[in-house]
Length: 146
Image (cartoon, rainbow, N blue to C red):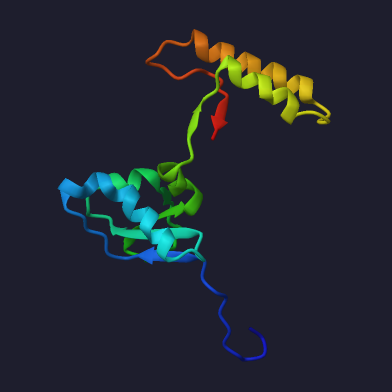
């Protein structure tokens, strides 16, 4: 700030600097995150720091690892998650698209210049998914969010 005043922007993240959960409750990490965002509805992000020496806990599988800058002296690993990512455990579902999902797609794309191309691509993705073995991921994919 050039005028010498001290001004800070309102924070948009909750930070967890100490996270410890008994192993018998480890699967409840998503509930813990949901509760955080309920208690802090004005925050969109949760930042979690962990010492490098601590083994990764199940909760961190939902987070994005933030690569440290080469010049950093920060002694912990930094992880970030957005509230929308947590909502998946609270009612949002993402699934592989099926042929029946393509029917409403035409209506949603009405008026879009390249609608025909998008529909062809979506149909090709679904066909690719159907051909793929159950234990492998397809080269291309289409998803539905509900």
